Length: 50
Image (cartoon, rainbow, N blue to C red; front, side, top):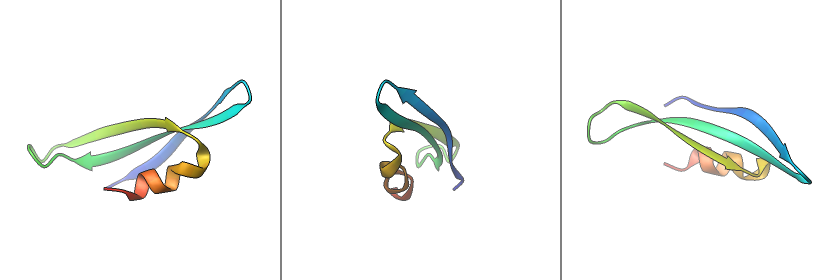
């Protein structure tokens, strides 16, 4: 499973990060991408959960 964080976003005083991870679909077996925008300190926790 490949993982990566791709963009750093700034909105006003908040700094946000867009993270993308690739997960394998249990139904079809194909890989799909999940995206989320969050604070930089939450990225590793989000990438490590399954």
